[in-house]
Length: 169
Image 1 (tube, rainbow, N blue to C red):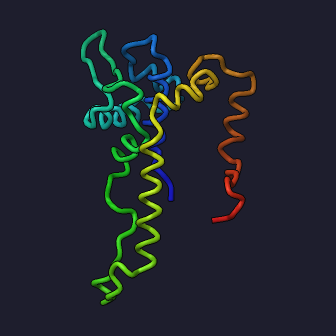
Image 2: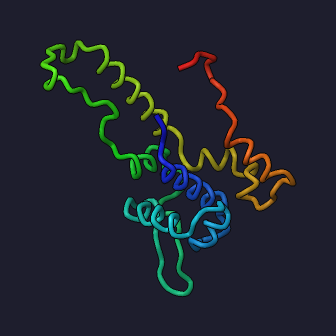
């Protein structure tokens, strides 16, 4: 399972905006430049965040985007739902295959429990938690790029993720 690039971009954008609380309104160009992403793609993501109430937009020469809520009131789940939806991750095709297990089905029960736990974790972590944990260390946010930042970013993209539990999935 993988979250979309839009979800990642939205989370990074909200993190950037919350961590730079000295700035009130951000232009799409400013945010795109900080993240090295396309202005047009970012603009589409920002519009979805505005529709969801996570951002506010202001038109005009001094226009831009601002957080729609306090960082402590925006959870990771709030953002994920905007781009991934809230429908169940596993849909059983019991009627098609004429299965009568219903609530006794271990497959459905397992996926339901996993989804519920994932949603609980995403609900617990707020944008403020992320800022408090990583805001001062994220070079792309602070503007203090490390000398080998581009090299390290490229290495991180191809590196295999480390297992938390040590058990392969």
